[in-house]
Length: 104
Image 1: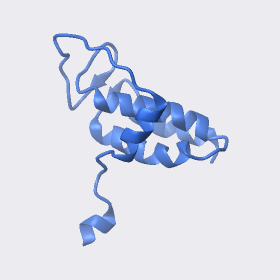
Image 2: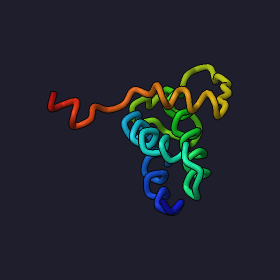
Image 3: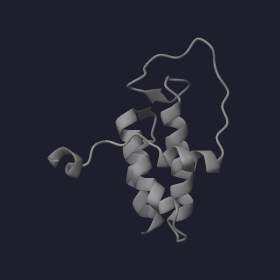
């Protein structure tokens, strides 16, 4: 796919206001694209790293607001996430149920 086609997803899911459901959607869409080796894989990798890191941070801090975690933690915590760790976490991500899951 064209890298520009990722822009609406990234704007919607990774903007200033975020929530777990939008971040899960971003991860499930970006993970297969990040594993490919085409024009969309580089922006998908960057978006995937942001989405996984944002999902793991269950608070609002700075300009980024988690609507499902509106408060800031009293103590700031540094974290580091490598690409390998992000890919592993994305593979294990709690996904929303699919239509097939609901129909069973």
